[in-house]
Image 1 (tube, rainbow, N blue to C red):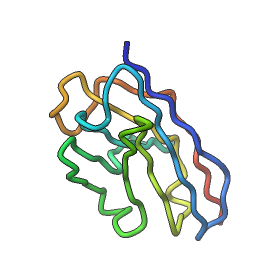
Image 2: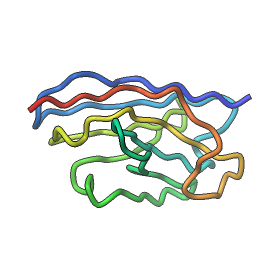
Image 3: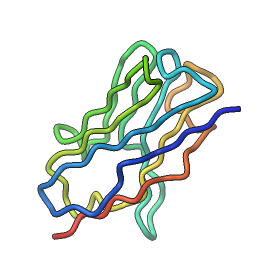
Image 4: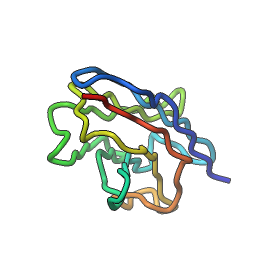
Length: 120
């Protein structure tokens, strides 16, 4: 059974930083494509950042240069370091994986989400 558990969401002032973590079980982040999505109120869920089993990374234009996705194979976690946060980054952030390890972006398995709120 695949389980993804996010943590690290918080209320932060604009310009601040947060680090989100996704702890996976039932899959291996070292070989599975993983991604972070977010959904703001009244908006569609959007892909924020992803990483493949081969280590290739991808970012939405809106977060390039500010967010960094990484993984810890030993802990089986994927993290999203978010710097220079803006009010428009406010959303629920979700970790995602796929039953097909190489499929990108992944969208079969989802965590429960973690709330990020950036105040101006």
